[in-house]
Image (tube, rainbow, N blue to C red; front, side, top):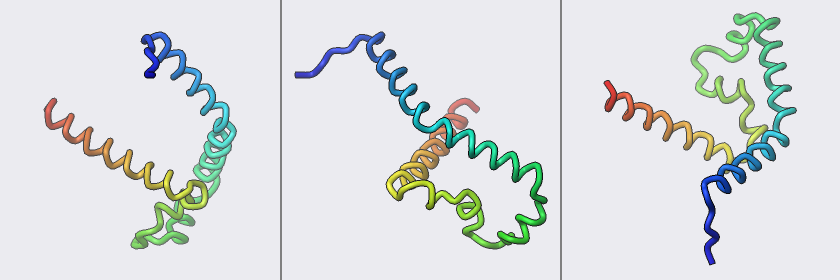
Length: 97
């Protein structure tokens, strides 16, 4: 039988899920921010440009090491969500403007 949830029940469950997810990933987020800040502050831009090359198609994915961090289904989901969000924003701007 389907469970009937009130809005307060839904908000409480959503908040519990957010706390659970953030509790699992906060350390990785902080480490990622620290690494990004370190690269931004101490690695010259020209060094990264020379390593990655300007015409190399894989330079952006290689720079963020997505394949090593994310499993394939999550990676596909990430790109799908980004694509849908971009399309949605495009339609939204067309409606508004």
